[in-house]
Length: 500
Image (cartoon, rainbow, N blue to C red; front, side, top):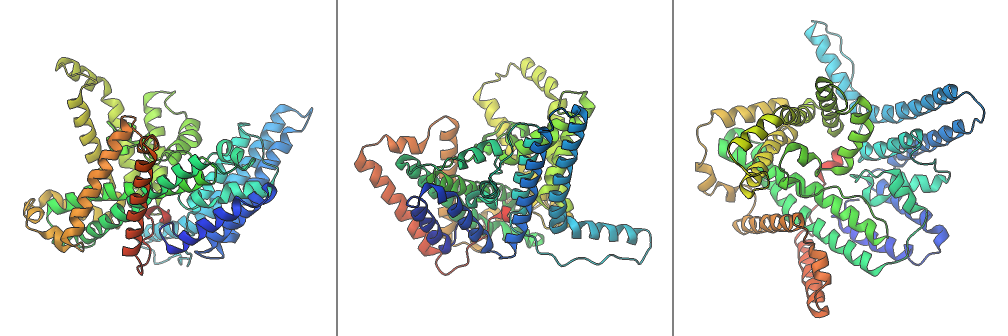
């Protein structure tokens, strides 16, 4: 079930209406049933898979806590037993993820190695459909086991509550990847209805729908047109499409996150922020502190720091950074172009660290103010362009296409003709649609700049007189209904991150 589908517009109010009128003792059970129903709408068999991940995580936590209750047992023996339980849970969970997501990728590369050696032997690929959101809920469950192993949280004894933690429907399919210390604690005490929380949550959901349906889905038409037939487009159009994809994936994934966070807030549950104006970042490091925060902090806490982080020699720190980003790239998809995308982001950060002192000396020599607006604008633009180059590898259909697009960009001398001869109006959007898209992007940038400066539109609206406030609510709701009517009869566009 997609957030932007008509079925969800029926499902969510029904879940809300029942949740706030049923007795407190059955609220968790109701949310669990609703979450499994939500997930099974893609494929009922998926329920078995998520249940398996849930059982592994729950049993792992119980066994880890049971090992700690060994009393006078030798501490070293207890620790070995705990490490064994943690590793078994991790191997089983990652084994399921590998089977469904990476097995055919591994078979494909094994066959390539055989072919390179001249062997005719080939392993037969397995017909497996990638379950929606498997990487997200697997990592959420695995993070819980690691937290219990580290004794950061106590093992959850209530199986239904833990099952809800793994399957909570707003963030089940594409995050945020929640931490046990945040979400599990909130699930223990169902919240009462809060008018302000519900209002703010609904406004955040509407903003997410604006990002997804008004911006991302329209940008997808232009981007797909160029990327699917890049040989017939100039270097300028390829660059434009790549920069538009940077905005598309931000609004697509950011839109999902805002709908998820808003829906949870209406239910009285606060999820972590997943985006914080990423394209206003002044470096790639800053970008990754703002982009997909739940995943980047997951890799930081459960991979980068255990590898040694930056508390080691510089070569080892650079190695740790590159490993983390390569794994992050592979997490996004079973294809080498995702690995290259991750490696490129790691390379950016390593170069940034290596040149930090040199850049500081250069700025001092040129008397450039660290906090000056010209420098910030330059850094923001440069970061956006570097991120966009990396996004080309992410979006391209394989390394071959990515290389072909880069080659055409560098060798095609025609840069500006297609940008100004009306080509953009012949790529699937009407002239009015293009102008509406430009206006929407301007609104998006303006809102991000305001948020960066600490101005919250929801708080600003809440402080207006009741007539003005409700006038804004009605206009916003009307715009959303118009958008829904415009999309009536069309299949809802999937979110990009559903494939991960």
